[in-house]
Image (cartoon, rainbow, N blue to C red; front, side, top):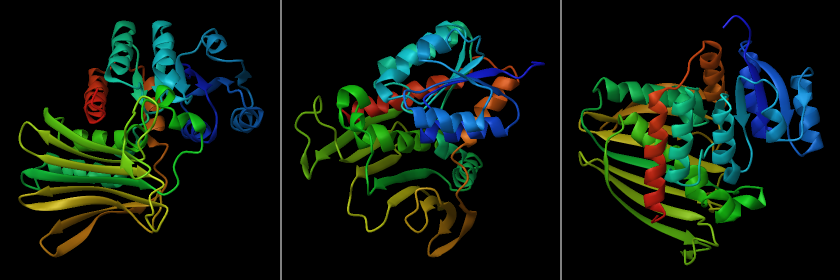
Amino acid sequence: MTDKPRVGFLGVGWIGRHRMEAMLNTGLIDAAAIADPDGESRRAALELAPGAAVVDGVDELLTQDLDGLVIASPSALHAEQSRRALDAGIAVFCQKPLGRTAAEVQAVVDAARAADRLLGVDLSYRFTAGMQAIHEQHRRGELGRVFGVDLTFHNAYGPDKEWFYDPALSGGGCVMDLGVHLVDLALWALGWPEVREVQSHLMHDGRPLQDPVRTCEDYAVATITTADDTIVRLTCSWRLSAGQDAVIGAEFFGTDGAAALRNTGGSFYALEAMRMKGTWSEPLAAAEQDWGGRAAADWARRLAAGERFDPECARLVDVSRVLDRIYGR
């Protein structure tokens, strides 16, 4: 491409603006238009992109001669809005989850394939230096055969928007909000093994979840067994008494050693990676905080380079199928 891609931004609250800024900082895209019902959010976005047009919603965004659309709206809208953009020949970068079920995600991937347009999802933990290092350790076989993975994400607060607590709008509770990152990290780092079995326990307010149609889980434990007998244990929660803001970890145990991504000081953002063997350990990647926009920036670079449909995005369906199985769907 000789001209910068024109990108629209649907939803410019905190996370939408952060991803918008990361994309603009690449110098490779133009923010052509924004849409958000909140006036303060719109004003803040215009400080980043004063030349952007302000429009009413997705209908008007799709008339703005866009090359790409960034979606940071409530989860219930992600799949439909993504499909509409792709059907109009517009590339998409969407907040997670791309859809509330595997069927919704599959429909979006099919739309991207049919339109031959780039599709990205903000699965940002892959882009941390720590997970990149762990992924490379596994790829080179330096951990031996990885037989166990422990995944943890406890958020001591929980979401601040009411729609997160309505399964019809969110698709689920802490598993859909936090567990999606954990499942993605495990399958991606392990090279996308076939999942043979999924067992789970979902709880709400300290008791087993009785009505997942009306109530979201706030604590979940799942065991995922792959076809090559790797055991992946996942636990995540909202509003857990964790003694700190967050507990985040992705630990990979192999026959020749282990590697772990962990947050430091209870931070949501400061993440480091360690390599371990027996009682010995050493840093694998130093603690860093400025990684949240890397997935967005990567999509912007790929869009500017003229990339189109990437068959690898079909892996998004694999992640969503595991989430469906955790929910018993």
